[in-house]
Image (cartoon, rainbow, N blue to C red; front, side, top):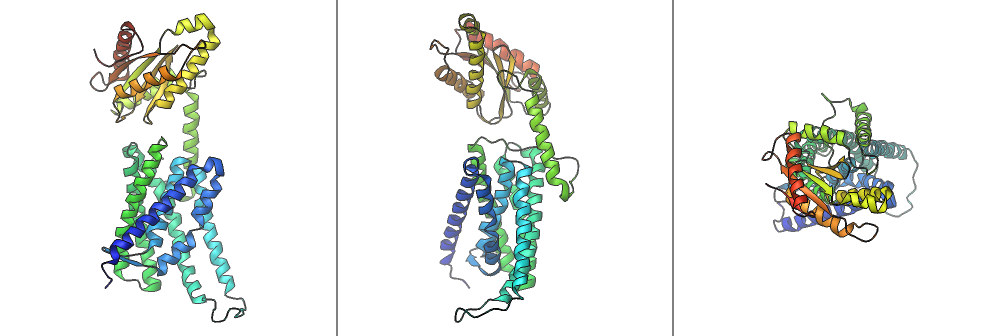
Length: 420
């Protein structure tokens, strides 16, 4: 029986290893636009052999069982990094490491088999090639590679499926995906270990408990990163029924590119904000599923005088800069629409932040960051409407917010009115 004093030390080392792994890998992905995505992909792929080696022979005792850092830290981390790559990029990008790992591991296996036919020389005294170990690792790598290929596809499909229910709960969504797929992987890989190495049952249960902990650790870390970088999680399902595995990446890529095209087709040509048509479509859809928590109408104060004093080109510049400042201060679950002229609407899709806090942040940012050509500050007035207190449909909320915007104008402009 293992010395119980080893448990805290082993656990602490696992946490340090997982933290270092996620720090380095997330850092490489974050810097992909500067150093290239290939750095992240190479670091992801280079770990596979040592993952398999550790999973085959390197085990440590913990309070809840026997585990391998190769499976718990590195393999679980790799799978979650593949999912993060999908969240931050798209299906066309994420299939590169999946196919690369699949083909590369079989290439290693083939070369390993060919090495058995070489005539070798004992160049280093007392050292020889352990072909038995190489054969054992070969079988485990074949099985592990097949499992990784299935795991990577299933975790992305599951992430897509959960989007309909958990689109605003990224950490929970990541954890459920990781826990489900790592459970499947633990069953599959333990079957191979049991067959090849006669691994005891403690290896299965200890590894499963540890992988659930790893799924939670990586989900929290990745969720914090995604939220910190204000990246919208991809939501929604890919269709009615599961896609064939061979077509999944083409299907997902086509859907994402279609949604990108759709998003750009509903934008205002001058400012880049979404246009009124998209406001009506998006607002009605959110209201229909009770996901619209409210809206803000924003109006630029004394905008007519800007056009009168400096001309319409300066007015256009002010509107473009106004949209830039507003979009820079909006939380992820909100969208900005040009309602008409110098009026804009912010739709809030179930955001946790209070609408008044959002509106005051927008007002303060515009006043401090935006000026006319003669150095005068640009200010905005804002009217708020909350759902369901002020209405359950888009038209009612717009009417209420517009009435409060008028109050803000009457009360002296450069202010927020949220009631009355």
